[in-house]
View 1 (cartoon, rainbow, N blue to C red):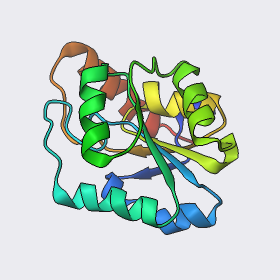
View 2: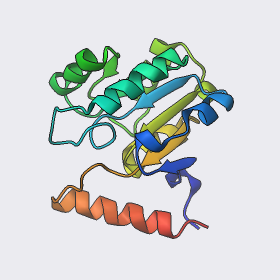
View 3: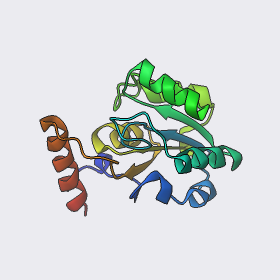
View 4: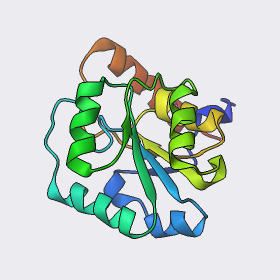
Length: 163
């Protein structure tokens, strides 16, 4: 059996399909979102209005929300401004350094946080090692480079062999 570190606590086809009221009832008060291929395709800066509305509703419903991305400052800053949500760039996921900054910023204990992302080897491992609730979503677009295709095939193998 593969170590539980690879398995998300929950899985949804997209961030739009997550039952946020259920998560709130579990005691989660802080949501940490990956950006690329989680809320927006990795190769664009365009955001659908439905996604902007979702984030407005999440903050209205009482969630503290921030971004945690391995991408560079320029890209993360763009989404910070669009959403009016703080973001952390160059997070080095799955290392704990970015999560430590998020915990300090949100001022919430780990058991009140959820991390939402599209990759097991960055987002899910990052959350699991820090004892944070993890939600995996399907990537918005498939990347065609060898490394990402290889990682996705490993992720599918892990998910298909969950016991």
